[in-house]
Image (cartoon, rainbow over all chains, first blue to last red; front, side, top):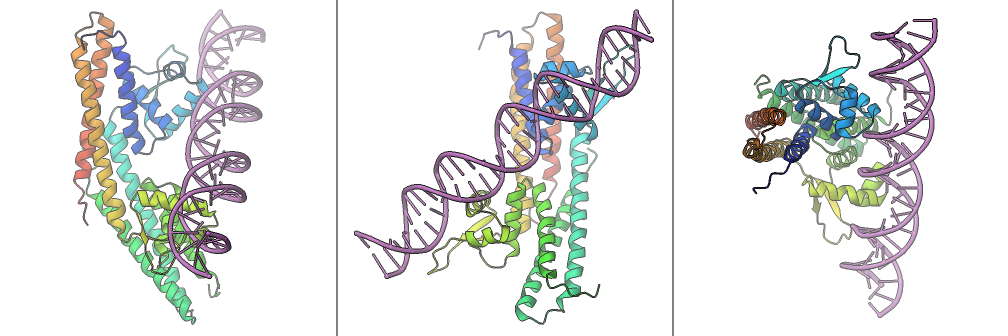
Length: 169
Length: 169
DNA sequence: TTCTTTGTACAGTTTGAACTGTACGTAATA
DNA sequence: TATTACGTACAGTTCAAACTGTACAAAGAA
């Protein structure tokens, strides 16, 4: 192609936004939050709500909500500019630390948390299991017990697997 | 507690289902699919659509759809029992292989895929970048170019990180 | 063949998430 | 002080996903 499309820059910008959003969605961001983040990330200077609204073609209210969600997740920060009344926001720079690293941490914590919950239930079941004189119920309780043990192992594997990843680079 | 709650087994069963579903949702399963899978997993023998419907209190149609989703993801298999007309389904046994291992593979493939897409865009941008005489546009293109490079690095980190996990135990 | 059972396609309903426009509280400006 | 600009709370709308009940096609039983 030798054509000199005057919108080539915008076209690539759009494609990149779409592509990178998909990756961020894998980290659990909603499609809209991901889009907003990428918009901020590609924009080299901090943006106002009105600029985001313009860039994404959505209402200011939607941007206000979206930015708050990103702030809560620590992906975006508010910036001050003296003599400027509007709020300014920019995407945090370090992608790896902001996503990969915190993501791993989130998984590990969740895995350990769930494992603990299961342990509690396992204990409860064990202490009750002898109460059953009924043969059939005894069998059911025993089966459930083994399943819980499998689940606990599974959570241990998860925690261990993510432990093997170096969180900083 | 010395009380001997006659429903203690069901109570624990429910709690375990709920807890383990949360873990599976982290792997991208929808809440409904996760619940259905755990129900099958805890049930020691293969189940019919009617049994699932009974167990979850939802329509048979919903079960039919749910099971198909799980089949597509390779989490459940159909079982034959001679002289029995109804379809029987059971959860695949090995949790680690079915979830953790395939999950890691999915991430790696996705990361590499996205990285390739970004590479293509980067090349396109590079080949067009000299067409700009306009100083301002030149700057924009250059900024975008650097951002794309950052994104590519990010995807490389992802692929590398998941590479460090041993997929088989 | 006819009758019955079983799974699923389909149409309609419900529910929740995302978005919009308005209205209001707060803070800067004059 | 009054006025203007800004962000967000709120109520209403839209849209998609999940669910239900009915109707039908396929396969087994009689």
